[in-house]
Amino acid sequence: MILNRFFFGVIFFFQTCLLASDLSSVLTTSQLSQSLNNRFSQKILLDYPMVDVEDVSVSFLNPSVLTVPKGTCGYRLGLKAKSDVLGKTALSLVFLDADGTAIEERTLATLVEVWATFYRTKETLKRGVVITRDNLESERLLLNDYPKRSIFTVEEIIGKETKSTLAKHTIIAEWMLREVPLIKGGAPIVLIY
Image (cartoon, rainbow, N blue to C red; front, top):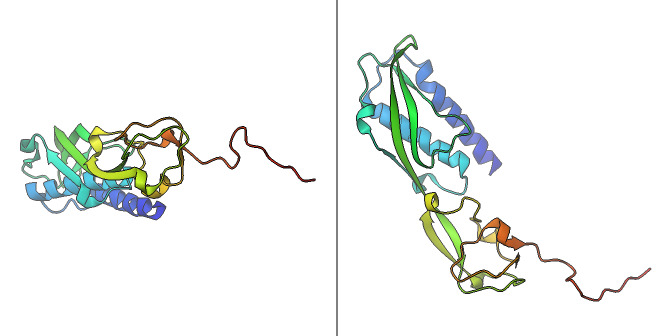
């Protein structure tokens, strides 16, 4: 997973500098649209490594902004490394000429939707129950609408104990589970010297 993040980080950096370094050719609207789509997808893959590129949908809410001004050879997007692009976002889009000088600045509005597999309880689970695969069901839902601190791999859930009672169809999050203690409270133990 760390290798994937590094790989996509390098691609993200390269993509950011790609058009700025190759300012000798004229940029078309379709190239701009494709490049922006790739940048948003790569940013999502960096921030949410549990999703695949097929799970990401990028929509431009004001597509007229993508009409490239005459003489544009590149662009700069006001996308910071720590910013979250999930959901609706408005970012600065600056068109650059062959010298790298700003021609025009516009505001780009986007909607980025991501599908992810969530795990939820099949039935109500009392406090202290050790979770098995039979207690869980999976469902593909929009990540935009649900907690990002949910657990997205079944291996991180199975074998853990519930901290409190979980209602039927509760989406499992990190804070709801704990490791099964080796010694339960009140259990007799034998010490050998």
